[in-house]
Image (cartoon, rainbow, N blue to C red):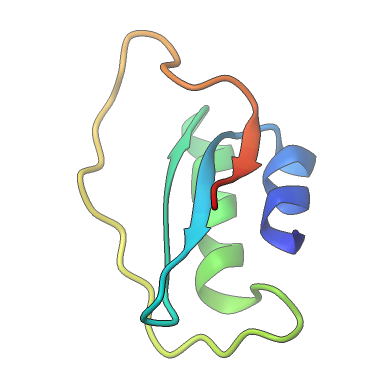
Length: 75
């Protein structure tokens, strides 16, 4: 819920999902500065009840147009 709110606040597109292993996976799209701001939030702040041990971001690339519209939580 907090991550979804932060994504919407920053205006990034994408999704997040909690895994059974207690981790979070997702995808972010948007302007570089906003994506980077979201990455900092995910790796340093997170949800109030979260414990962040490590943040790993992979498969980063430029895309010609957004493939996802809006930001949400997947279940």
